[in-house]
Length: 291
Image 1 (tube, rainbow, N blue to C red):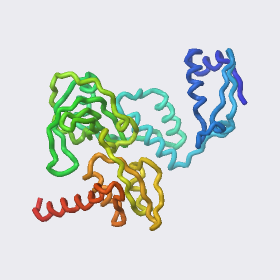
Image 2: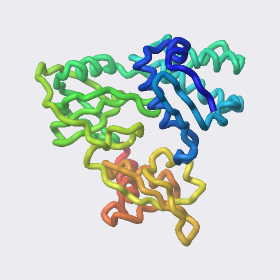
Image 3: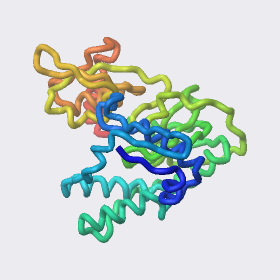
Image 4: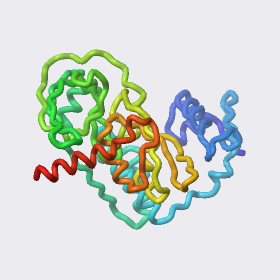
């Protein structure tokens, strides 16, 4: 158990007392996996006093292996490289301390910056529609689209434009590196709410029309697909595992199944079962044509 006054805590951590109470309410939602009530911090604010229970896990300093420390430092440096993140804020301070503990003066992580990144950010902030030339995942799939930018986001080391696409009549997530031309239209965007499918941290969701495909594959191939699954996999009688994946493009799904090896297949829905065969036929046709 720990106890202190709100005034002392506010002075120590540089908060206004009212703001401190709000932070304490948020801290009361923190704890350890599986985050059941018995693993959460118990914070009681009574008039001007704060009493805390469940602090045993905090009495022992966290210990990271060198590999874990480097991974954490690299991830933090990548986050700092994204425009808009305060370069001297709490994350930077924590990174400096971690780098010192690891014996590293500086951890450098470079993110490729696509040519039209800043312009698209400005358009999204201004709420201005734009026409783009976009290279799709398939060869020959270049299109010109009128899109209404919502935001530029960084997911898994890649920059994306979340926008409402006039060609598709729906929301889409575009890789900024595949946008080859941007033409300002000077037209305001229509006020819309971003769909939940694009609201998370995962990069691969293509839009609000994404479907769930259940893919079976060898357990050893899970490392190739773990960031894409939307729920824990289950085991099949033949020893393989099956996992749900949200996909908005059949070609993407076909490439993924081929990458998982010969034991992989789409088991549901039936209309997506031929996705991998379709990609293979397309590649064979290009080979025969010499293109």
